[in-house]
Image 1: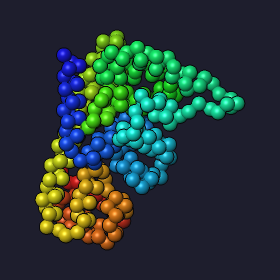
Image 2 (image 1 turned 30 degrees about the vertical axis):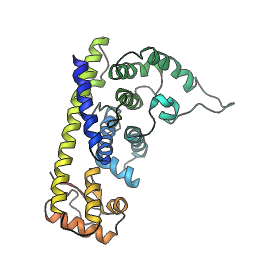
Image 3 (image 1 turned 30 degrees about the horizontal axis):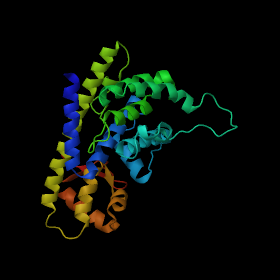
Image 4 (image 1 turned 90 degrees about the vertical axis):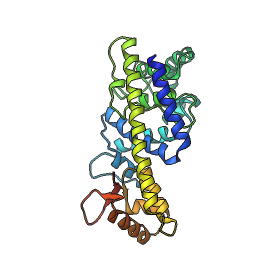
Length: 286
């Protein structure tokens, strides 16, 4: 019954994403990648990740590697071939070339994990993904204690044949479903509860974005040109937008972008979040 309920939640999210704009998938992938970075100990928030993905902007802190890892998670959650097409390609890691010194190769370490996943082919993709997540560390497929690759791989497997949703949300409502310990039944119950809560969080995220987009489109319907509609889409797709970022995303001139941002801010559609005179960023106002 628990599995059926979770599969229903994921199916509802899949149907909604199939009907919605492409930007919704990107938005959810960004939120989930940021949440998983906290699970992995990197602590990358959505705003910083959005800026890094769009403009490769990092902060003064030494977070380049953490941003690169979160960026990898975003790209794998946002699209492209899944782990079934090739685990090494999905992870972006390969065995060393012939003659190079190395420890056990990735293909050797992955062999046992892949064999067990193949034997579990009759399981529902959600249950199978949970098993794969908990077996990942035992197979030594990632550095000790690193759960990011395991979670992203499992998220793609759990989505099964979904056409709208290509990953099952795992962490955007908390990381309880990824906690180890206890019996197999206890781990499975936590896994199912975690995905169900994350699916509900994803639906709420889409509710907010959809409501804002309708309000913004109605308010901007009288404006001429392509920039207003493109800027509205950029603000729906990304949690945080700067003028240079909006310029890159819309293809409009800096003057047109700044004029439209000022118009939207004056009407309460967006809010500036830095309080600065320069290097300003806006988000959709609730």
